[in-house]
Amino acid sequence: MATARMVSDLAAALNELADLIEARGEYYYDEVEQKLWIAEDDACEDCQDAADEGWVDMDFTYSSADFDADEPPLHPHCQCTIEQKTRRVRVYD
Ligand SMILES: [Zn+2]
Image (cartoon, rainbow, N blue to C red; front, side, top):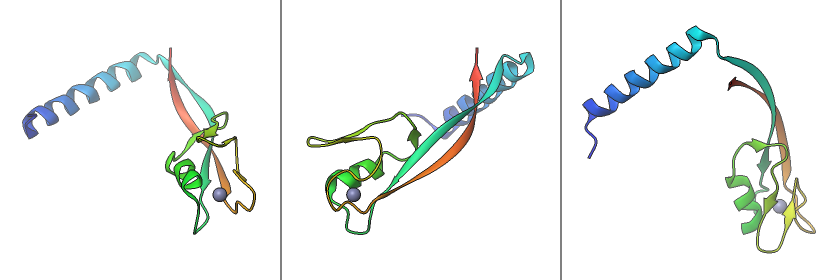
């Protein structure tokens, strides 16, 4: 079992590594379009599963046993909506 000491040592090591990479400037920023499925109040299980994916890239396809969809509606009478945002991410070479 990991002790608190081990965890904090690991966290410190990761921070050092991040600082090293940053110092060398081996990354650039890119913008990624993301989307979030907002399930309606009484969403069906498939829609709830889609919402549970959280923020995903725009080209993500929500799929279940019965449906495949890039965005709502997933099925007839689906009242779900989609939220979009642009996220700035570091891209490391
Ligand atoms: Zn729905």
